[in-house]
Length: 283
Ligand code: SAM
Image (cartoon, rainbow, N blue to C red; front, side):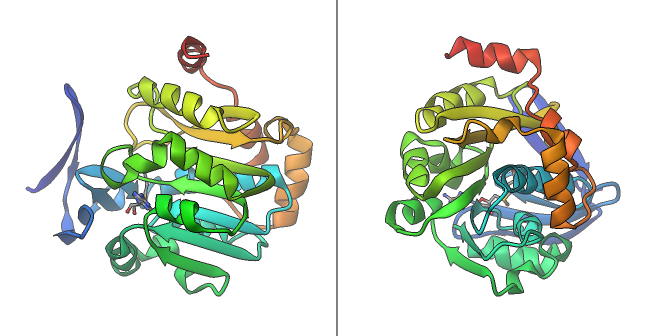
């Protein structure tokens, strides 16, 4: 029986049974696998790290897309960095927005996800509102003069090609691409095991925004409890909106979700004390 072992940290790993292998190859940037697991559905890994599974992707994608977009309230233009599996694009396009640019470094991830993980993008790559750019997200934010209302960094972890997306320069250049009171949200690891990641992001991204914080959601295959999403904006009210306003906006948006709802949105900014303490250490 074939198994995939994800060695997360020196002394901890998790294992998935491979019931059917759909794709395994080295792309120009990373080692990509897409396989089937009886309990999780199709699973995508990059460089030995689980990126997304059909069973629990909705939690991650709904929370990263709908929290900043509904908190902003008037989003017309969204920038997604990474997100090659297409799940983020699918959720972002549920909103009545004019335009999405997605900047993904690895064309093979997009192509193979469309072929072997089709429920993630669910046709989103054919949407006329999309401009798909195959490039390093860092180069894009440095060179573009375009502006966006929300930027979502749906990146790999800060090793390999994703490393640049966690640097001071990236946050500084991304901020320049935001319209006034725009919001930036980034995936920021599992703080139970990756305390240094929230501390580093808090300092680096926090130096760019008047309001810097995190929100949380538990995604079962990102082992270790809550995942944190970094939140940066100059609009100090956006994070504190009441459930009533969020209810109004969500109702007007008029689509169904499986994890996101306005009460979860509001509550997700309440941080567990071990996260608060970790941030206090670097304040
Ligand atoms: N949800 C996932 C997670 O947190 O594990 C992330 C999924 S998505 C597949 C991550 C994507 O980021 C990958 O497709 C990868 O190719 C892309 N990526 C990594 N570094 C990048 C960079 N510098 N610029 C643009 N995309 C990048």
